[in-house]
Amino acid sequence: MPSRRPNQKQRGVAIISALLVVSLTAILVSGMLWRQQVQVRRIENQRLLAQAQWISRSALDWTRLILRSEADTSPTVTYLGGVWGVPIAKTKLSDFLGQIGEVRAQEGASTYLSGSIEDAQAKFNLRNLVSTPTPGVLTVNVEQIQSFQRLLTMLGLNGSLAKTVALQMRAGLGRSATRFQTQTGNNMSSANGTSTQATIAALAQGGATGGGTFTDDPGLKDADDNAPVAPLQMISVDSLLDVPGFSAEAVAKLRPFVTVLPTTTAVNMNTAPAEVVAAVVPGMNLSQGQAFVARRETVFFHDVGNVQLALTGAGVKAATSIDPNELDVTTKYFVIRGRVEHERAQLERTTLVYRDPTTHTTRIVYTRDTL
Image (cartoon, rainbow, N blue to C red; front, side, top):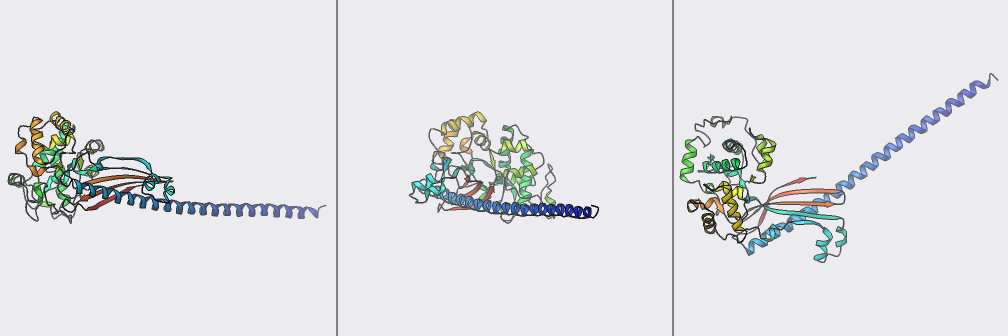
């Protein structure tokens, strides 16, 4: 009996060791299978996302075709009643493909599209705060600063922030490769040189880079033009968060009425909301702006002369003295917002498109995706 006990102990140890080896092997194998499953899932997600991006690209090309065809029919007018202004509700891709007779239309039964086109020139363009009176000189535009002040005050914000934003915009453009880029055609007067009075007033206040005596200085001095550190160029409304005095709540209030475009632009009076109209027209209050928009709903404006007559009808006394280059009835910049739901993949794409007023061709300025 005593001789059997060591053998029994050895057999017990062997059984326990075997169980440990089996358990360890099972853990290793399950870990490998789990990592393999995760890798396969990741590849599937990448494939679905790539397909969603291609679908979004196709939808963008289709939207650009709509903008071009509409410009061919109405080359001088952009109004809210156009085809471009009709949003697309959530619709199956197979419905679009079936309408054009695609034989594989049912392959898009699990893919949904939605989106809209917005007139970027219906908002106040912060790029207008800085103009180029002469080549190589960036000047704050006093008239546009006053318009932005009226908009800020109308929305319950501090109107003095308008000059701060103008200085921030000018400082950011000082080192931009496209700082002197302008548009041709009926546009802001700063495209071909600002008005004499605005230029003189801006220079008197130190508005031109390379000299001046600004006393209301938020830290961006004219003498610091060659400093190694400069503010980032403003590329979107969210860039206002970098400007001292702006909070997230203030930016949220401004977002429906403010934009940042690559060049100076005129406000499209056929699409601008009442707040923007009242801000860009001197001597106009919000109630008059609402009356102007209400009158616009019955018939759109064919030219700037019709706009001035409508402003006079809305009660604006100095409507005939408004610079026609600051107002327009057509649009060159559009914001296209699209959403694609392709099985598990979801993609939201925001694209800024420029439409040439002469050739009606469209060019993509930038594209931003949100997954």
